Image (cartoon, rainbow, N blue to C red; front, side, top):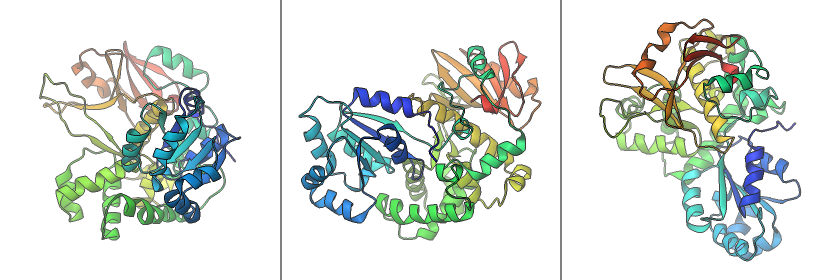
Length: 401
């Protein structure tokens, strides 16, 4: 069963503007399914299949004769040599939407794309399902904590209890876990990690000790929502700091981890310059950190971190799946005043606190006044309805994202 995606409109618009469309994202987030749904008349070739990959690598001309445009090519990073041949073909025609590519290894992939298809390709990044997509309640607008945004969501957003939210958080956001295809979470995630180690990691870097890398992934997962400190990661994993930086960059480029950059300006050095780590799928994060059920996670020591991770990922999806850059930051100054999230829009900074509570109070937003050029702010929480907290800060239910 296909679950409708917010990003469909963006992909279709790109196909009308560019000769090639590239959808990047982690494994199993639904890249090829999305393209097949949007462009049902296209031919299809998956480079995950060894025989087709071999043809694409060794006989690119023959491959492109066999699989004619309009064509969806899945996992293009396995045959980056095809990009030069695709360029030659699309340059002969003015038609838009000739090739649709997917890729799950952004580092190697983007280098080849920028060299071969500059000016010819529209690029989008697909994450897992959003809460709205799971509930078949598509939200076509990026999240911004303004009164206008709240009014648009008030009539359409669904309400969720804390147990509802943690069931979603624990299951995760991969389509096959939410469309009835797979029900055993442990089986899915153990297979996912094994495939990730065997395919992507060996392609991205020469990692001799896969068990050490798996330990590293688990340690990063346990730090979701925390400030990134390479020295602490290195000490806990037993690897060097340069290796820690390299391995973390692999998790980022393969779409498993997101680094929320700090907000600072060139005119001040009073603000932290360290990003925060967020796992992009809370279900995978829960599996890696050993939370056996939604009920246990909800009552556990990491409940707040998982709720914050979930909220950040949902906000990120609201931008990327609408084809927008995500202007997201976090804030901490020398006085250790922190704000979970700043959203930059039209010269204003909109502060957001993310709280695992249904009854937020004004003390939670006391640091908002440290922000210059401050726009409307919010506390994202488990409240069942939106309410004003101060004259320029609203309580917003998590489902409004």
